[in-house]
Amino acid sequence: MGWGGSVLEIAVPPQRPLLVYLDSQDYSRFGDVLRGKSDAKSEALYRSLLDIGATGDAAFAYSMPVLGELLQFDEQYAETTDRKAEAVFELCGGNALAFPSRIVAHEIATTALNLGMAETGPECPSWSTEGYWYPNVESIFVDLKKTMRAQLNDELSAAVLPNRAARRRAKTLGKKLSLADIARNGSQEIGEKYGFAPDIVERSMAHYLEGKISARDASHLLFSAIANPTAFVAAYFRRYEGEKTLPLWMSDFGSTFQRLFEDFRSKLGPHLETPQARTIFRQVFHSGRQAWGANMLALANDDLNEFGIDRSVYDQFAASADLAWNIPACRCVGTLLEAYLLQTSGLGGEAARVEHSFGGDLVHALYIEHCDLWRGDRRFCHLLRSAMPETGEKIVALAGDLPKAIEAKLLQGGQKAGPMIQ
Image (cartoon, rainbow, N blue to C red; front, side, top):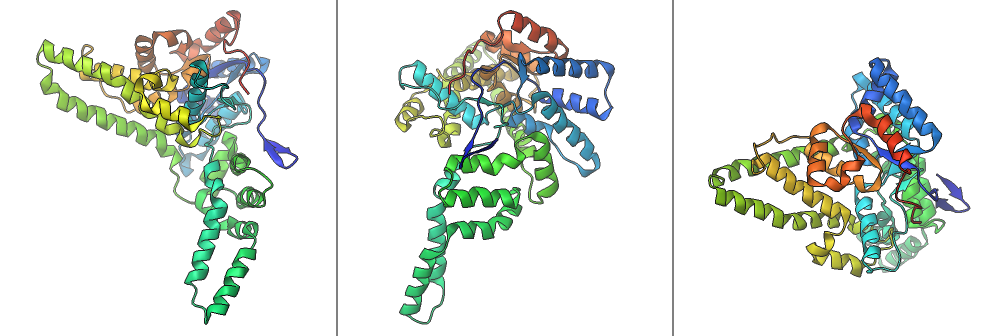
C-alpha cells in the first residue's frame, strides 16, 4: 500500500491465482511449527504449502474472521500469538479476502449485473494483495468536517462571553480555525482511544480535511499500519491499551448462536411428538430460509458506494426475499441455518449437539464463493456438502489433503473465476 501522487492506491492484480482459504486451526498449527512445538507431519505440511505458494500458481488468503479467531492474546503466551500471526503472513503475504460486509456488497453488485439490474459489476474486487481485510470506514470521514464544525460552534455558543460583539468575534475566529490543525492536535487522544498510531490518525484525518485525499483513501490510510497480521498484533495487543474486542467478536457470535439454538430446541422438543407436527416444522424451516438469508443484506448497507451499488437496486433486493436469494451470501446463510436447525432439533434424524463453533463457521462459509478451495472442520464440511452439494468440489475436510487437492485443481485448469472485475 503506498502513495501515488496525493492519492492512496490499492494494488489489484489483473487476474488471480488459485485461491485457498484455510481454517483458523490450520494457522494455529503452523504457528506451533514456527515455535518448534509441532510434529513432523504438521511441519512437512506447512513447508509443502509454502512451496506451493512460492510458485505463484496458488495463493492462500486470510480474512478478518480468521484473525478474529486466531489472534487471542495473553502476555504469558505472547510468543504463541506472535508465531500464529507470522504463519499467516508467511503463507498468505498480503493476500486477503474482504471484510464480511464488503463480501456481501460485492455479491450484491455481481448479482445485480447478472440479473440485468445494473449495467456494471462491482467497482472493486473481493480479494486484494494488499491485506485489505479490514472494514471500509469512509462513512466516518464523509461527515467529519460537518461534525467538527458543529461541535466547534456548539462549544463557542456555550462559552460565557461578556457581550454580543465578543460572541461575534469568537464565531468569526471559529470559522477561520484549521480543521486539519484540530485533527493534528487530537490525533494522540484518538490514537490512544481506538488503537491507531497517532501519526496515522493525523495523516488520514488531516489529509482528508485538507482535501488531499478522498474519504475512501483516508480509510485505507487509517488501517495501513496494521494491514499485515504481525503489525496488527504489535499495534493492537501491545501498543493499544483500550478494550480489545476483536478476539471476542467471533467467540461472542458463536456463543449467541449456541444459546439461541439450544433455547429453540428445548422449546421445540415437546411439539415434535407426531409425524404431522414434524412435517409442519420441516416446512416452516424450509419456507423461512429465504427471509433468514435476506437478513445478510443489512451488513452491506454502509458499503454500497464502494462497490458502485445504486441505492434503488439495493432496495429492490431488500424488499424481496425471493430476489435476495440470488445473492450467494443470502442463499448460503439461509440454507445452512435450515440445515443446522434440522440437524440439532432432531427433525433430520437423531438430534446433534449444538456447537459453539457454528456461528464462526457460518461466517467463514461466506468466503466459499470467493475461493477455489475451502478448509473447515469435518462436521461443518459434512453439513456444507449435504446442504450445498454445489460447493463439494471446493471443500477440503482434512488439512493433510490440501497439497493433493491444490494439485488436482491446478491440473483441472486452475481457478475458474477468470479475470477479476476492476
